[in-house]
View (cartoon, rainbow, N blue to C red):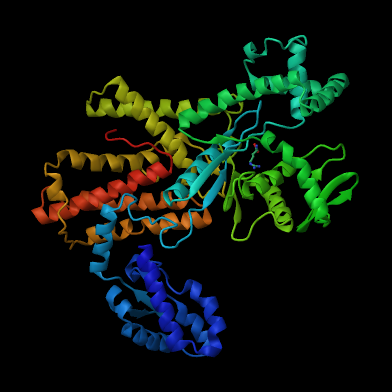
Length: 603
Ligand code: ARG
């Protein structure tokens, strides 16, 4: 209903400007126009609300109700408003409740039924702008280190945000900024060389059975053996100078990690382009030069850094962002600055992005605030372009502590996902037994996979990402509540109706629809909110909004389904209700796709 909403807001603005705001108050008008019309805070208030008379009462020092009465009178004279709305109603101290006319809602429903995107408009549709490009930097695990639940969260949230932008018609570049460079490779390669007595000739055939263990062993030696430490430092220099053998060893380590990451991506059905930190190596020096040239860089105790405005440490001193260490090495932040610059740069030596979105845990918030500030001061963020950090909280066990196995070890992602599938399978088998149902092995395998993986993803996405969340298989796999199985089950119910429906497509496609029941209207109004939800996520990057919406949509649909006959009604009622089923189905399927969750016909 975005189009209607915009039209309505525009008419309200015009009226306000004409009637109430005289020239001398124009500045005030600019301030208040942003929130002129809002979504109704409660269903019974109608579709929208205008609360502006309370603000105006302060400006004009007049009773808000009086202002509302005179405003409503003028609004009623506006043709567009009277076409769209039922009588405008003044409530409370001076709120204006706005209810759209039923024929307007029916018109919208009809158009959404035909729309493959269930009413979501394309972002570049109503203006002549070219498609905008959005980069989503997500997942981004580190070579030879564990891909942990934090990376899982980033992967799930980043994938969903990417999909939402794609639906809106943006060009989306999903980037995996993996940690594939840095001084840790010195010790890893040295360890590798030691293990293979310095003979890395047949390097392609070397297999490290457990990279994470390998990392730990190397680290232990690095921390305890001076001689190993020295060789590791030399190895870093060799690697940076492109020594053939060192590069070969580095590639081996990357390949092995990559294989493990890809396995997880395959299970989760994630598409992402790998462009690790090493990619930006050639640009790091330029970052220093540019910052130096722009007089932003300061030398402090041998390190080159930028002191951040408005950010201080515990002692109240300005916080530095270190760009080059005393020993000449570069930092995580240096690479991020080079990456940011490259991504906004015009092609061919850049991505020409309009917006960059970074999805990491909130522990990196300060890092990104610093990086964004430096980039802004260096003028690397073009006008009309935007950067966002999308932080998220920790994943915890039900005890509120760090997620661990029963033995107290960190949980491997692979194990976590297979555990979810295993539990989904147990639930399914129990259900089949209770219902005395027989299903093939293939059905059981596929269904438990869809439910198991979907549940993990949904549990993650449905939380307000900023808070920590407690990981509970039991909750996420439950058929009741705001869970993936509940949504999937609602979809299965609709598939069931479709299987039982024996009308031809032509009949169902007939144009004439009528609604009279309250439960029908409730469903219609919910369905019509879909585009607003999607567009709001584009702004605030909170996918849990979509989950909350879907939960409410399913509840509204299930009430409609439980209390009203669908296939048994009169022809016209039957067609009208089937259309609502089909739009609910489309909205649900599309949304689950946006959340990266596969759907089922039966379960
Ligand atoms: N590799 C980092 C980590 O594991 C995440 C990278 C996020 N992206 C970025 N451009 N810094 O914490």
